[in-house]
Amino acid sequence: MTILALDTSSAAVTVAVHDGSTVRAASVEYGATAHGELLAPVIARVLAAAGITAVGLSRIIVGVGPGPFTGLRIGIVTARVMGDALGIPVSGVCSLDAIAAQAVFDHAVTAEFAVATDARRKEVYLATYGVDGRRRSGPVVLRPDAVDPVARSGQVVGAGAALYPEYFDDGREPLLVSAEWLVRVALDQPEFVVDPIPLYLRRPDAVANVSRKRVTPS
Image 1 (cartoon, rainbow, N blue to C red):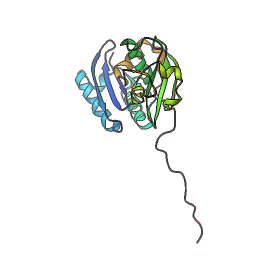
Image 2: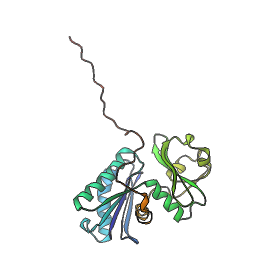
Image 3: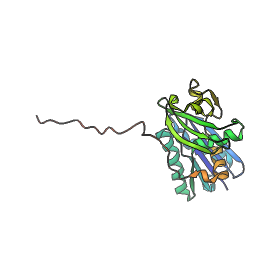
């Protein structure tokens, strides 16, 4: 088994090659507006570091967000195109679920907790989890001051808590999703696996201008 995992739901591009029991190679590149330029070179570099080519892959796992429209779309489209070209399955994992799973494994949380990531527009993507890392609610997108006070005052992992410390009393790491943890969630908790369809939660930032100027007869 040789799995390629990737995520572009955050300010980073994260890619890993996993053999089903351990990570063979991984890389993270930061660039909130450069996912399109970064992703292909990072994939190529990770495959080379793992000593394989794309034809040696047996499965692809991609983070489905939630995340900003453009960055998230780049990762999911890349995964689906590669899967189609190689004739291998492509699976999705909620990016917040992967962050939650890592937090539990790292003992970063000791009670029920929330994951909050940066949604831009002064908002966060948020989901709540039990101490076992299983999602209880969400994900949703909302302003930090609109988050339930119980969640705000409890343990919160993710970049959203670090970005808005005035609203989250107990922010903790990990801040961003790791491609390795997408694989671990997919293998250890297959019920969390979803179709590789982007989880946007809101309309894209850029939309076509459909207004038309009225033409009056001269």
